[in-house]
Amino acid sequence: MPPVKHNVCLIDDDNIYQYTARVLLESTGLAKQIRSFYNGHEAINYFRDKKNINSETLPDVIFLDINMPVMNGWEFLEEYHKLYNTLPKPIVVYVVSSSVDTSDMQKSRSYKAVTDYIVKPVNRSKYLELIESL
Image (cartoon, rainbow, N blue to C red; front, side, top):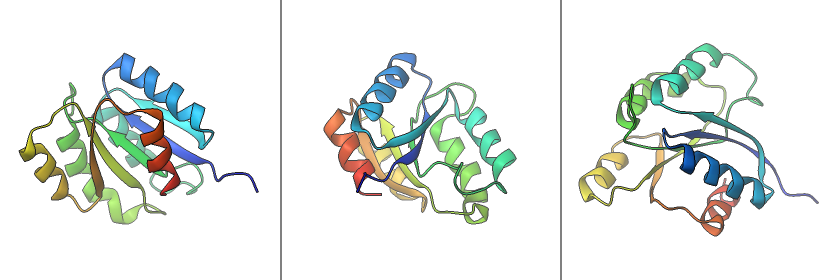
């Protein structure tokens, strides 16, 4: 039986992280589609526009950076929380940041939508573990 493939959403303004994450996720064989956004505003607009679409096209998992221009990860989470219960399926959200500040880690736990806080860099085995746990 082939492994289940998942839709993945990357929200991060760093081109190198986006590229590396895409390559690592593709190498796991578990990513069906990878959608990228370079700030929270682009991503939240996608979710607002698509909130009534088929659950097959929505991501199964979001990897969200904190520090981004236009709309940062915290601002995205505030807006996402308003849409969270209207989406046709649950979406796992991981905050992925280079920040090791315990206040950031604690703040991420205050959001019902956030599953965990992951410190960058993220290697292939960690992505594999996170995707397999979906």
